[in-house]
Amino acid sequence: MMTVLAAAAIGIIAGVCSGMFGIGGGIVIVPLLIFLLGFTLKTATATSLIAMLLPVGILGVREYYRAGVITSGNIKIGLIISLGMFFGALIGAKISLALDAKTLSRAFAVFLVLVAARLWMKAA
Image (cartoon, rainbow, N blue to C red; front, side, top):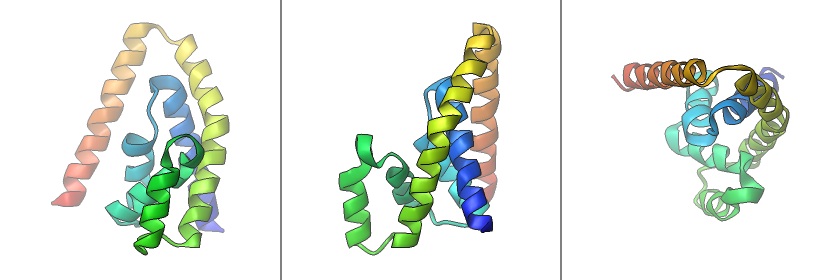
C-alpha cells in the first residue's frame, strides 16, 4: 500500500512539475523512484518510460522488460505514476499561470539545484 501511495505522489509531483516547467521523466520521476522507492537507475528509467508509455516509451519499455530490468510490478507503478501526472499537470499549469516569469524561472532553478545536489550526494 505504501508503494502505491508513493507512486501516486511521484505521479502528482511529476505532473505538477510538467505543468509548471514542461518536465517530468528524467528530471522528476527517475530521481524520486531512486530516492523514495530505492529503485536502481536503470529500473527507475524503465519505470519512468512506463509512465509515458503511450506517447513515447512503449518500445523502450518492451526492451527493458525483455532484458528483465523491469517486472509487471514496475509496470503497475509506472501506470499509477501516469495517472498522477494526468491530474498533477493540471495543478502545475494553474500554478505556473498564476506566477510571473521571474518567479517561475527562479523556482525551476532552485528545483534543478536541489535535484542535482541530491543526486551528487547519493552517488558519493
